Length: 180
Image (cartoon, rainbow, N blue to C red):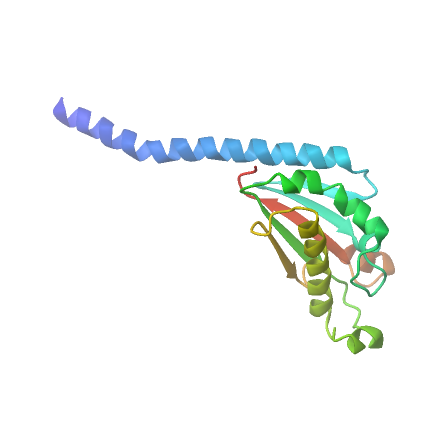
């Protein structure tokens, strides 16, 4: 009888962290789902693509909405698109906000090289930094947001056509973590 009690107690102690982890996962899911729903409500389908992944919500913004071709400064239209995201992002306390910039595989032109941008990696980094700077100015917590340029890696379409290259030029904003 004593051995059965010890064994059950031992098994209960082993199971406790798993049960608690499942609760946190459900909470994380609920909070990210709420962010997903808020973002879906804020945007039209032609502005951004919002995808719910396991443990993440990813917002993909087309390059032409944010930047002039070959540039990295956001325009007034881009500010309007990003501003719709701010109410959701600025309420986060534990959710990481990862901003990733991507380009197509077209080499950098002379104009950009004159500004010190010599590779697609440089350009994508500058674009991600510009988006992060804007979101920080609008109240997103600086401890939760990061920028990363990935250049021409991870294409979502073929770089052999103009349409494919346009799809590859994008900013992805990914929400990762337990939510608010």
